[in-house]
Length: 342
Image (tube, rainbow, N blue to C red):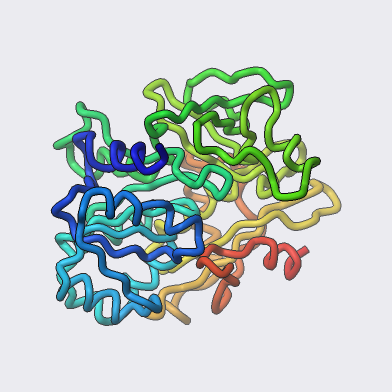
């Protein structure tokens, strides 16, 4: 049923990034990462041509996209970032490529860079416990044909629930929050393919399933149109002076600075406020040495002045670093960052 739902949400709806039998499929997610998100099963069901690149080397991937005429791939944001910033990408024709991004938030800066290269792109959401499909950022019919600048914010959202997936947001007291685009709650799911339990861990299993819903540990909001936006992991939310700050919102904003390659926001201990946000940024090679930490912080100050984030959400410090630690599947490792910056 998971494969059936994936085929439906990726191919049956009129939207971007459609996946059909005449597509050439190349996964850029490891097979050990929730069986490459289950997409190889859908590709096999459809009889689509499949290309497996081996090691994820940007030059090899770009060559295969062109020579094999690859049309459909999926990956985490850091892999796409690595590909687009490789020198070979400047000359590559990627106008026939559709890329689904999941595993971490697809920020607007990366999405804009992909669109400039002619790539069709949208976000996907799931986790190991959901095997992993839960949501895809399909566009609804009235949005089709609109200029990209009008729909890009929808394409980078967590998205709409897949067929056979039910999504609800609950507050700390277990009450369902309204779908108004601003009321936060924990993302809870029901679906036939969700995991029942953790192996030999009954305590975590009971905590996972409460009141008949799988509790994801993600905080999000849902708008009136049914689009979900995950705003943070519960453990990653930065709480300063009793107020919550979304680390993902900070990262998404800083991604839109022309000099920023990638960033990560974490909470660090503060004697007065309990926690304060710290954001670490990696610069694009062309801007290394020409853009400083003060300029990046000022970019966030201006975002606060425009109402994009609260003023108390502006980090006291922005640090430029050479690299950010990654997990085995290419996600930014915030556990390692919190140990390094307590």
